[in-house]
Image 1 (cartoon, rainbow, N blue to C red):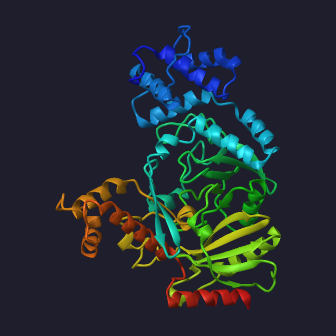
Image 2 (cartoon, rainbow, N blue to C red):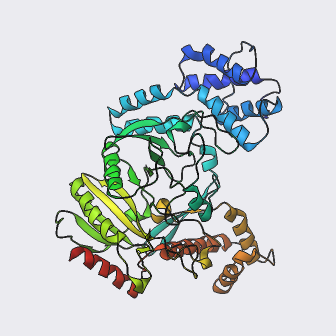
Image 3 (cartoon, one colour):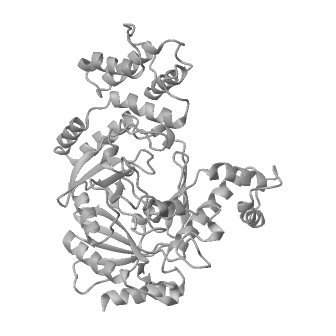
Length: 500
């Protein structure tokens, strides 16, 4: 039982818990008796003491913890993380309106303005603990200055990253129900040992170019209002011209958000390729702030501005007031890239019928204009680089070996949780507290020793800066046209193919 509640006070906790959500307006006071009985059923109780709410202002998550702890102590659930997760969601479902009601309220707010609707839904998703605010707060975050702008570095302590091989296998993995963690059938799903509790999950129904889609927030957000837009049909990712049309249609509905898609191929794609979806939200990424290297025009689309962006990866930015013209320009570039090869820089579009070129698109509004970044990708492997030629190379994999997806392409590093302890060991090694360090970091740590005058006062700054430098190299590894003279000459050859 939570230390702030007396043992045996489950009735008081239930009373306070419901009172909190009544006071915040999430729950109508008329429903107090009904919801009390729902809680009694969940906790296998037949009665409750008629108590007044306590005068102590307990935090909602503190009360939730106390309720879950009671369920463990009374053996209603097993003391397992997955069991706690499922039971937490069940509790929060009781104070979360039905999907139909939330959708009704969302579109009522939308009629005022789009931002009012997303503000409403974002707040609700935090209040009902679908967005794991407490876990997200554990993440380590800082910025790292580079010639391309300030990169954003995060060590993700809220959610573990997947291995690239596991991600590739997931493309063909099917579960019985729901088919995957992005399916609409997750809404209200109880969950189990290998599937997270989704009883408190709600999805806003939206129209995307005449198709039924869903809009939800990510429970483990990597940035502000991290959103997911998902097809109501369980179908594979398809990042062609229709995806660009879809991104712009979503922007028309939510002009204050950006929206983008992972590439549709393994290695350069995201962790879920089996369900068509996009990601968006309210955050200005480093890529958006990046300047143009040079501009060009495609003759058939004179009203669309095009530019190569100064960025460690290979990015073409399009901008125009006519979204149809921007889509058509994107289609020209994507079709050309799909079949483009340049062996002098290791780019082969396909081998034995297997495609290797792909695009990571990112769309946003700039006033009345539509802006689209096309990040050129290639997922080819070789004997020298079995994980991917345009993927983090072995010298940087001690920091990051996972796929470089949409979010990292835009300049936000999502580094694995193992680094929290491993980097602490590196710091202790650098200042002489320990005389050994993890083998994967040994060469890197010795280089830092040689290059810096390290003290207890500056060791954290030195290591943080070095990790930022590694992430910059990760992005450079993933770039198809390198930033050196040879790579940029090759990029210009591709641009000439577009403008001839």
